[in-house]
Image 1 (cartoon, helix red, strand yellow):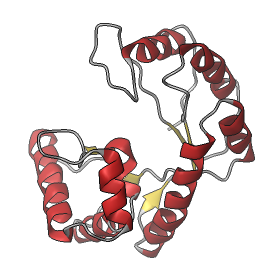
Image 2 (cartoon, one colour; image 1 turned 60 degrees about the vertical axis):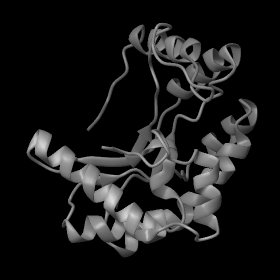
Image 3 (cartoon, one colour; image 1 turned 90 degrees about the horizontal axis):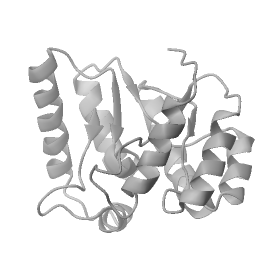
Image 4 (spheres, one colour; image 1 turned 135 degrees about the vertical axis):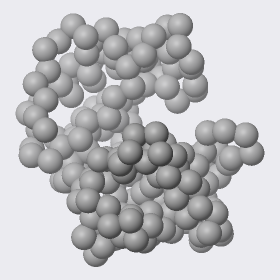
Length: 196
């Protein structure tokens, strides 16, 4: 399930939400109710809780929000996985500099440190490594970064984020359709082994 707190009418954008999370000026009850509501809708539609939970624009890893998420999941006796947005893989650090997304990588690493600590404290399963940050606003760099990403070998417990799509699909400033189309064509042209 993709927990959403930023996309929709009257919801703050990701930057505003992150600032409010950092300054602890969020309404914890609102976050809890939003998560419970989304989990309940998922359970009604599918008959069970999601096997995997993450957050749209990584909101589930933001300060305060990640604590609320852990408390709610503990009450549900959740046995699935939660995506942690950090990595212990040094190759990803090098790629973040090479492909111009070091600032985002660094922010996510800091968020991930505290998020991972909170997940461990609450005995919630999570991945060890997270990959897939890409230069999504630069089509030329994207093609090079995709090849570098998928030609790598990954440590166990790695989650790769991807945003394949179509030129005809919805576009946003952080995930333009042109780049989603490049990623779709790249992924559909390769045989990628997935281990679950």
